[in-house]
Image (cartoon, rainbow, N blue to C red):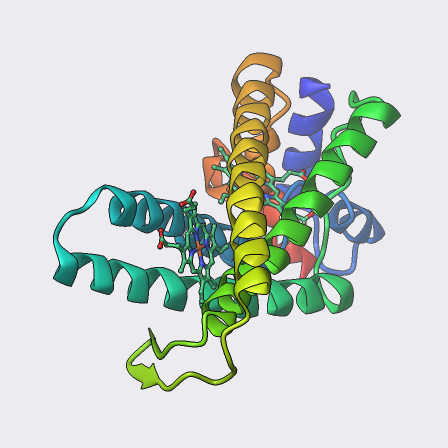
Length: 221
Ligand code: HEM
Ligand code: HEM
C-alpha cells in the first residue's frame, strides 16, 4: 500500500501534461477540494464558538456580558445556517469528494456517511430551532449589529417545544462531533490510513504528497 503510494507520488513528479497516466492520477485525489475544506473548518470553528458562548452565557452573572454573548451566539448560529446551506449547494454541484480508503469495509463507509448526513441535518435544524424559539417568544431581540422589534406574537407552547428541540439537538451535535473527531484522529494516528489528510492536505509529509492530495500537481492541470 505504502509502496504504491510512493510510486504514485514519483509518477506525479515525473509526468507531463500530455501524459494519459497523469489524468488517471488526478482521479486518485486523497482530499476534498479547497472550498469544501474551507467550509468544513470555518463551520467547526463557528460551532465550537456557539457551544462556548452558550455555556459561558449559562454560567455568567454579568448581565451586560450575557446580553453580548447571546447576541454573538444568535449571529454565529444564523451564519452557520447560511454557511451550511451554501456548503450543501457546493457539495451537490461542484465539490470533489475523495474515495474512501481502500481498506474500509462497506459497512464502515455507510456508518461514516450516515453520521455525516446527520451532522449536516443538525447544522440546518439547530439554527432554525434557536431562531424559531427567539421569534415565538414575541419579544424584541438583537442579531448581528441590529435590534429587531417583536416580529410575531408570543406562542408559549411553540417557544417551549423549540427550546427543548434546541437543547436536544445541541446534545446530539456535541455527541456526534466528539465521535466524528475521535474517529478521524484514531484512523489517522492509530490505523494510519491518512484520514485527516482528507480534510487537512497540509498534513501530507512532502510537497508532492500535498499536490497529489489536492489533485493539483502542476503537471496535472
Ligand atoms: C464542529 C465540528 C465539526 C463538524 C460540524 C464537522 C462536520 C463534517 C462533515 C459534515 C463532514 C462530511 C464532509 C462531506 O462529505 O461533505 C466532515 C468530514 C470530515 N471531518 Fe469533520 N466536522 C467537525 C470537526 C472535525 C474535526 C475536529 C476533525 C478532526 C479532528 C474533523 C475531521 C474530518 C475529516 C477527516 C473528514 C473527512 C472524512 C471523510 O472522509 O468523509 N472534523 N466533517
Ligand atoms: C449550530 C447552531 C447552534 C448551536 C450549536 C447552538 C447551541 C446552543 C446550546 C448548546 C445552548 C444551551 C442549551 C441549554 O441551555 O441547555 C443554546 C441556547 C440558546 N440558543 Fe443556540 N445554538 C445554535 C444556534 C442558535 C441560533 C441561530 C439562535 C437564535 C437566533 C440561538 C439561540 C439560543 C438561545 C436564545 C439560547 C438560550 C440561552 C438561554 O437563555 O439560556 N441558537 N444554543
